[in-house]
Image (cartoon, rainbow, N blue to C red; front, side):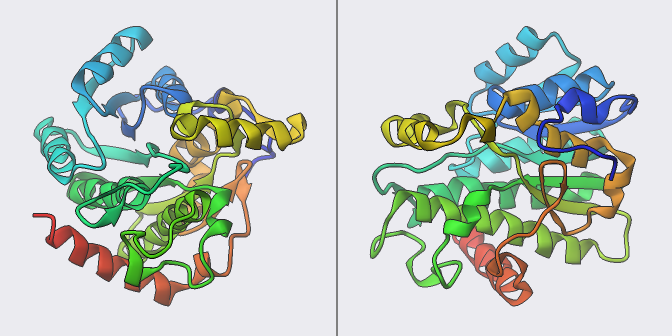
Length: 295
């Protein structure tokens, strides 16, 4: 990988890369690093399929950016909405070159659940599982799936994923549950890559960095305290925060990123649980069972 680092921006890591004729899907593209990702990849020539919670938000974002693309409604915590988004995208009859699973929620101060699943796990993992696996048949032979995780995956429980308490009813701590959902993101990318073995398709995951965006809107007091405790030098700007996912989506060298976890635009170590392929396969099987029950 070229000499990109913590301070590299999305524009810098895609400089000289042409995405003309490519189609990129981005969830949560209406704000934060998703917005910057869509803007920069469109600048490099990509057709952007932008997913937001409502069609109105998605259409307004495309209009504000003034880019070539299609707007899609996708509420990741509602399986019916995710499946409808998948069908809308398939109906565009476009080959998909990149799917970026970017959207998410973080550190809900109180336990919320739907369909018996804690809301962060449902939104960040299960919703994206339905979304990405539903679109795989439209993925280009050399297509990429980029899953936005977080260094917060280190906060997951000692067992990794509490399969016997996916609702969070027995135990709920905001950052631990967020960490579980982000660990699930990494494990999903690893499992998806194993299913890509023997092809030129690539699935990877990443930590974008710590960035002041509206991701912390659900727990503003706690999140603000978290930011205040940090050395400002360790915080990234939004253009810096979008860099790693843009690199994995666009750089030719990222074809070698299969199944790997990145941070600061480079391969990065993750937790021991995040490299546990037995755990990853169990997560895949359990998620399939959960999804089947959401029909």
